[in-house]
Image (cartoon, rainbow, N blue to C red; front, side):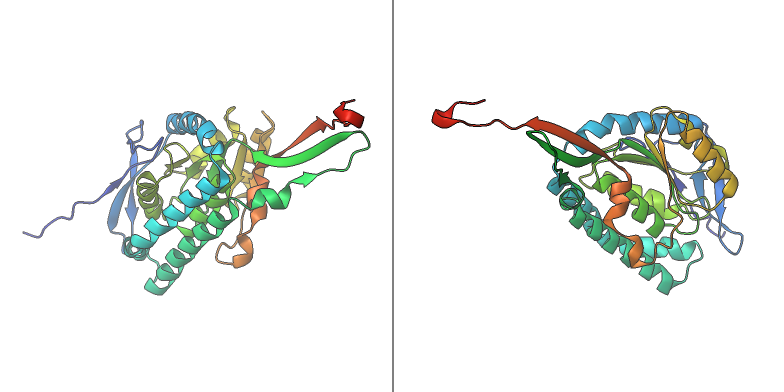
Length: 293
């Protein structure tokens, strides 16, 4: 008898663990020959809410790490992705991408992580300032992490778009909940396996699979989400996200970019998810004999 392959069920990634969706639903992922190649979870609103709770719990610890340490962790993720690149290439090819294109996408993804690892301890120097004021004060402006960011990753790329959106968000001390591509989801959960075994604390990145038509309104209306990043080009979804973002004045960003181009990796994507905090400090005048006045 011909042997039946045991297909992998790709679970979701929440708080450093790999639960099945609470709804119990999944969809069969097909290749170009209409053959089932994997079972993929259909995440629900409850899964998203659980992921936001996990992200919020991880925010203080992650944003409180030194910028240099965050850079070390992003570089470690790149190292582990390099060690498993053959698996990622295989998954991309399984999803219908040519071997050459798959190799290029994986290598670009590794390089992008290294790029943002290098920016972790530099963007603050670039975007902070000492401001001139008329009174006897020092006035400093510095970027600080926004908080929990919901991300709807690009639909037309399995790995590169995912890495390109997650990297600047977490490099700046934010945490995120990401909806992976529905048509090309395999690399997203394999990337989650890399994150789970790296130095990245659980909850900093949470990855869901499922349909954008079902989840985009929840990603943009949740009251404990501080910003939403949408990386697709559906005009109706864009409109809904912009309207929902106004409910608690969360910041919407629309990153519909060609992630294969080097100009779309830059520190200004880190800055998008930063709040500028300005601090005033009085200057103590020292008089003759050391007296302060």
